[in-house]
Length: 294
Image (cartoon, rainbow, N blue to C red; front, side, top):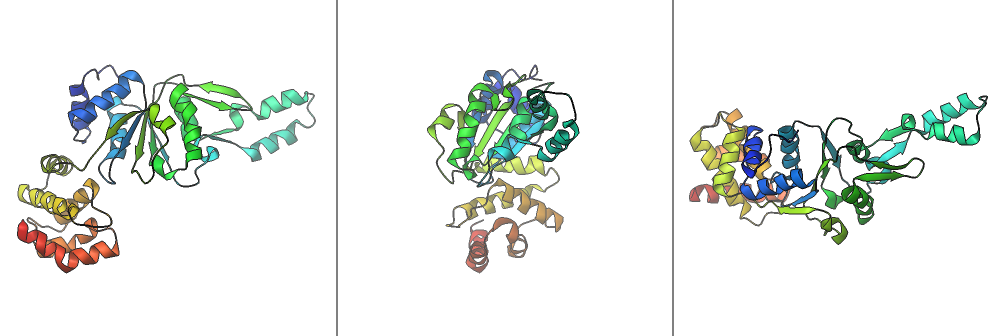
């Protein structure tokens, strides 16, 4: 249902109702996804809210979210469709004595009743309204899988050799995310709108924290955001994203902290550092140095 989303301000307001703080650039890109029915590729550092865009979009449009989590070795059987071989074999046994031609028997076992729908196929079989299809971390899959996606992203259809071409009755809103662990192919990029989400400014990140954790104190939220932003400037193997900021703030509230001191920062260090090297470096001198600047 897109009747209530007609302007960039509508997108911003809708996302904010769902707890997602956005800016006009991203809201404009999302509006174009809705109005042009064109996929969008969203790139940016880990933990800046790329996946949450698709979730907020689905909630704003009051439609289903269908998620495909990509990984190395992802293939068509896991992403698009697979035949239920056991059910087909059982059907063949039952039909052995039936007075049907070979063609009729084949047509029966290669029907919808024997098809296992995976996320990509499910996204174009939606009968009521357009779902949001999230292809998460597409950079983790290989180039061969990108080729599988091209037909879906350009024609919103999937070809199944035994059944023919299945076209979408309701074109899905497609959101692809990438952490840029590898460069994606030009053919994929040409089919998509593009948006880069950087680490947020201090003001935006503070708005995110207070939006997600409305019960947090003003002093603590300000100190946490300043602390994490300082940590990002260090040469860490895994810089903290917005997710880590929210985890840190939530942990400190849970521990009953009203302000951020050395003891509180070290208690929540596991929310910020995501490798043993980063943890030890922050614990050794990073925490005290950052707090002294705060």
